[in-house]
Length: 72
Image (cartoon, rainbow, N blue to C red; front, side, top):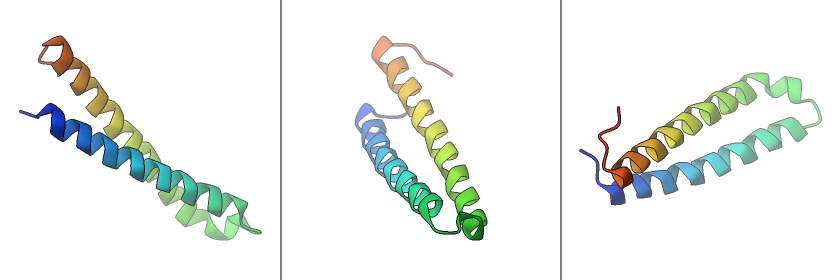
């Protein structure tokens, strides 16, 4: 169903997005009054969690493909 090259490219994009979101979280947490940015910080942390899950699923699929198993 998925090609290894597609999964690797998608993983690269997700890794890049994860880096950017982590920087956003750092920026909001470093603000003088981080409580003022609570909703933006919550959203960024939720996105971070979702992208981490997506990344993990891609890694599992890549491992399945390398091992010749069908996975989930």
